[in-house]
Length: 259
Image (spheres, rainbow, N blue to C red):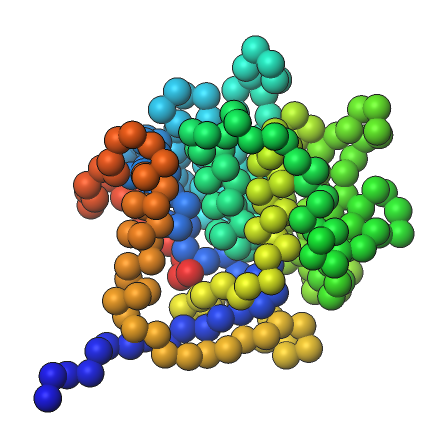
């Protein structure tokens, strides 16, 4: 008899905003291989820097477990001032990837900007007590829009386990395109669990009253192929195929987290 297919133990965690950061490669490798973003080769830098082909956007990943590990800066354009977005180290990579996927979508100019609050409201988020905000049904996530109706400001997102235990924060500057913030909120409101391996290093809580964690065995080939499928799916949006993997140009392994 042929040997049984190899399996690995994974966890499916919900709500996804409390699943931990995951593997940064879910973001960095598709940006490089499918979208043509370049990164530096300085082995002395403890961070990853990726720049867009037009040099207008810069994504920085730093090994700061308690800070804003991800920073995205975009230069000013004729119709928009410079803008930024930052994400805490424990922000799930699926949420950040929704933003970078929307940013690199070649068909984005044909997309009508949407209300970033709409996906949350459809997902059962309710108005907060003040500050033009919304809170998740379980009370563990919150968003606030600064400014006023006449002069809207930045978006602030917080995932927390009680008032004294913030897990991560994300911030979008006032001039960030609404479609990118809406991509983030759509991913945040998605009820589907996310997959994690070795989540003990970054899983914020195992309290069954707060999160649902289902452990199961999955074919190893499926887990190994998920990132490659993502690269090819994103590359299909462009006219050129993805570049071949190059070990010397992968993000430094010491910044990696399990997904």
